[in-house]
Length: 111
Image (cartoon, rainbow, N blue to C red; front, side, top):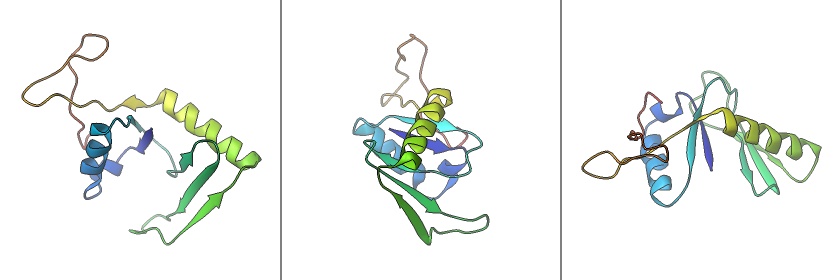
């Protein structure tokens, strides 16, 4: 599962990365207003990239092992996941219905 920060799909190659992940069964969602993009692995490990405003590359990251901080990051991820918007792909050559029967949209840079 991947929760993307609004605007992250504007980064070169990121839309293609998300699409490739989804083609392999990954779920992706778009969330607005997040100050960081942590990665959480099976409630055992998290990585928080250090990226300041104006930086165009991550120069370091925090690695979080089992701890109350990891528990808080997992809870934050789950809360953001529930409030974010699912990214959906369409079948080639046309639209495919979502679970609710409505046509789905391909991932776009607009979110």
